[in-house]
Length: 346
Image (tube, rainbow, N blue to C red; front, side, top):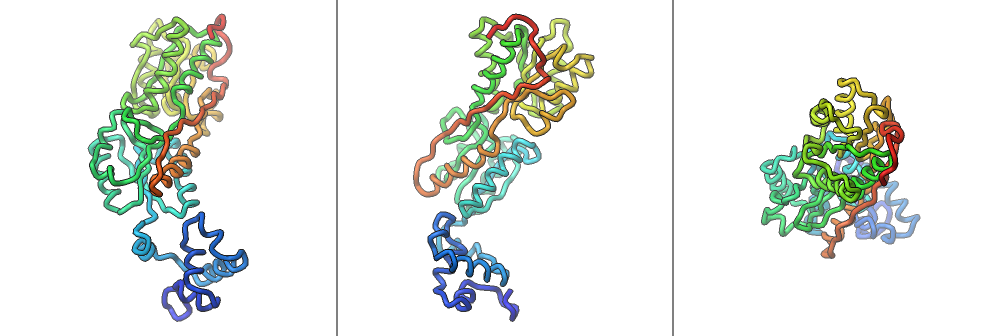
C-alpha cells in the first residue's frame, strides 16, 4: 500500500521516478526475456528498489486482460508426496518462474476418472498450458477435446500416441541395470516392475528384460511382478519372488521406493543385501546412498525433466512446435549389488 493506504500502482511508481508508465510496466511485468532490455541497468534497479520499498504487487487480472494470457500453468501429478514427483515439480516451478509464469499443481492419484475431472478443473482456470505428469500409456484420459485447444507437454511418462513428452531414457536405464547384473554373473534375476499402465515401469522393465534376452537368458513371466510404486507394493512383490526355494540372486526394482520395500522383505526372510541378494532401484533418490546398505540405483535427472518440460511448453504457447526429449540416466553402483557371483555374462 502507498502511504495514504491506496494500492501501489505502476502509474504511481512512474510518477515518483519521472518515467513513462510503459517503461515501469516492462521492467516489472514484462516477459522474463524482455525485462533485461526494458530500461538501462540503473533505471531498472531504481524501479525495482522503489517497487520493493512501496510493496508493489502485480495485478494478474489486469495483466491477463491486456495480454489475453493468464501466465498460469497447471501441473498434474499422481501424488506430489512422492519424492520423485516433488523433485520434478521443483524443476517445473523454477523454470516457470524464469519465464514469468506461475504454477499450481493438483494430484490425480493415477485414477483415469479423476484425471479427467482435474484436467477440466485446470482448464477452467484459464491456464496458458499444462504440464502432465500422470499420463497412462494408452493416453485415454488425454483424449478430452478441450485439450486439443490447450498447449500441454507430458513429463516423466510418455504415451503410445506420440504426444510431446520429456522423460528419462527409461529403456536405457533398465538396460544399464541388466548389464551390471550380467557383469556380476547373475543368471537368475527378477524384476519388480511397477504399474503396467505407466511408461516408467514398462520401459525400465523392457530395457532390462530385452538385455537378458540378448544374453540368451530370457526371463519367465513368473520373474516379473507388477505392483504399486511404493514400499508396500515393493515389499509384497519381493516377498513373492524371494520366498521360494528357487529365488533369484538379483532383483531390479523399477523405482527406489519399491526397492526399499524389497529390502524389508529380504530382511524378513533373513537375506543379507549385497551378499545373499543383489538389489538395484531406479531414480537415485537422496535416501538411496544413505541406507544402511547403500542402494545401487539408476540416477534420473528428475529436476531437469521439469525444467525442460516447461521450456517445451513455452514453445507451444508461442505457437512453435515441441519435441519429445529423453534424458540420459546413469547407473550408481553401490553395496546393495555386492561383488561377482560367477563369470561375467556381459
